Length: 254
Image (cartoon, rainbow, N blue to C red; front, side, top):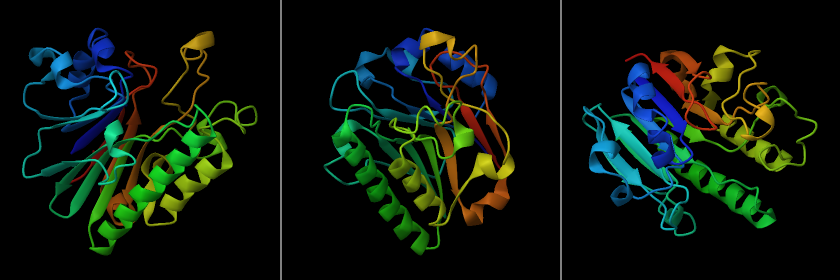
């Protein structure tokens, strides 16, 4: 089973940059898109569908903002939306897919760049999702959380850690929350497999950052500890264009 996550920074723009062509080459069983910035009726049906996949969209109520979409060609699943919390669910940030004993969360975590109140909102979002995950783990089920976490966990996960120590996305309290997930039965699948590898998944459009590889690793697969033995690889597709993020794929043995 292959699961690909990609913050497309606007699905309408990404469609014009060959998004589906890139994803067909990757050929995942599940596609998790974040920051789609559109409602289904704003995209032509033949563009928003992908042959062989069932499409589930959770757009934000605010036009041109946030939103996630999950594309599935794996049957026998149940899909639901949001965190069942009115503080967060109008921003279209979560799609949950249940398979037997496994739960997949496609998540676009809040960005704290707009001020301290949004950092607090982001941390509350982390809290709410972890509460739900703790309950699922308590039921003996396994979890995959994927998407744009909007936080670099360790210094190895961004090019300029010292310069960004007071920047949202690398604030101590944000990093601590990623660690709380790791202390609550999750593993960062990429970092387990590649403890010393320097690779990024997001580059600002400014200053030629991508060509100079001055980036951040913001797009993750956190998996339940009991599921890690089934993970064979995590591949960062850093050469795939179309967004300021690149796709990341988890390879999961049946």
